[in-house]
Length: 84
Image (cartoon, rainbow, N blue to C red; front, side, top):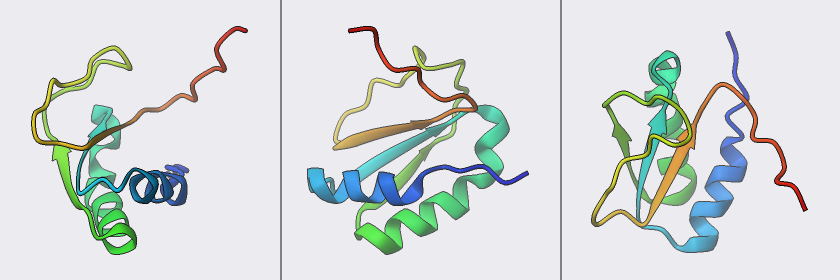
């Protein structure tokens, strides 16, 4: 199945923040796409991309990381816009 990971958007955000080290966290069912995502983001940004290999149980399950400039979490569902 093809997923739209919005990789161009992610690459633009990495560049905007001048992030040098980025961790990506994927829902378990998306982990097979990790190498494709890493290859794309490293090529487009020059940043070092790491993959969080532990489980991910949703948006509230994010790792506490040191020495990482940015965490990008990929899941199966879109975020809804917050209420105003």
